[in-house]
Length: 514
Image 1 (cartoon, rainbow, N blue to C red):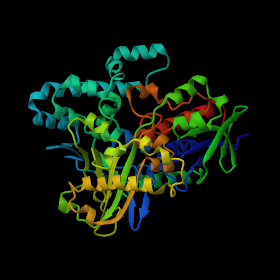
Image 2: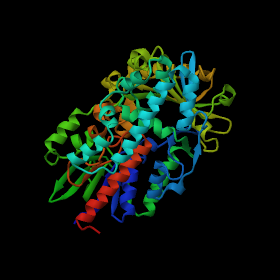
Image 3: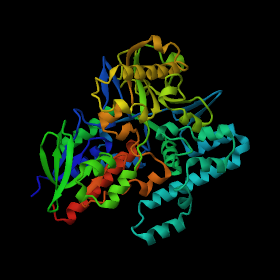
Image 4: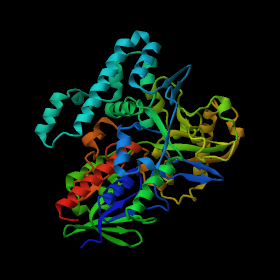
């Protein structure tokens, strides 16, 4: 008999929610984490009295009955963490040369704000919101769609917008609704949220992200660590076992049950495995080749990872509110043409100027959250970056990548700080704590494939069936969670874990496991 009903690999948002779902369903659960701390991108880090979030900047759909609220409710952690709502009048500032626009809460409010700013484009704006409505309606309906070709045919006949929008990049939709460069820039203002320019981003991911945040933006009180700890405490209450520094090296299957093996040689038998690792790692490296169908191996081999990131994490005594910095995130673009901005995101350019960056302050979003010492603040600055520009140092130990790497990292980091000084003059003279990271940091700390921030890149061919959105792997009893399943982002990863957990519980029930 297997030692565990379920072994969950990886403790990111998807792994935590998957483990919690199966544990709450009464199954003997083991959660394995490769690193020395749980949480993945939900794991904060600390420097000299400052606490920094590694990946979470805001979440949405938290009003009663909305999607993230329902997810947390089903997992039993909704009341274990509180959230503060960011300014509904403008929680994202899209800043372009000589132009700025604030993303606000509410579809109708946002539509009216766009029409007020672009009165000549009212027809195109209304067309955009009609397509948004149709896509969201179809996406909601797809969750209850049956299996098989006839179910798909019926779905497409009822929702023809999906036949079109699932195949084209977002730029084609923008060109359809408007030729106004400023309006196109505003409608592409969240490009940093999914790490792709309009010419490459899936229409579906853009519209789903926009619809998600138009419900309002929220930040967990206490930061990402508070959300992570809510899951961990619930797992302990349910009796789940959790092990740190337990990097999985192999998943094999014998006589219907799995054997999960770690690098240090521990072996954990299980009836079911749920992996929060990227599908390219789970199915391309960990799972024995003979248990993975050939078509799945080929599909995984074609997956393209998303862009990585270079970040600056800053602790400062600068008075941020005195410089008009608020809880709103700043998405800074050096050009109205967001496609050109992304073309310029390479190491050579980033050392000289910053085509794009995302600026955020957890201490302003959550003033009582303990993010910084009294009278001080945190600032996080992020830009997208190519893994290729750092790849030659990837095989070296973290602390031994050499002077050339350290110099490159510092030059890009200084450009991040310099760009932020457009909004926070004098910031470079008030650096109490500063730490820089590159795509190699993501690769090391969260096992991100080629440092990608968003799992497989969210292009038209890698959304829906192009991902592993059903949270199944093609291997009987092996389920998938995380950014490689439905999509990137905390909400999507938690949802993937919940779906994987439900399916794992159903699989065990069918096999007669109690």
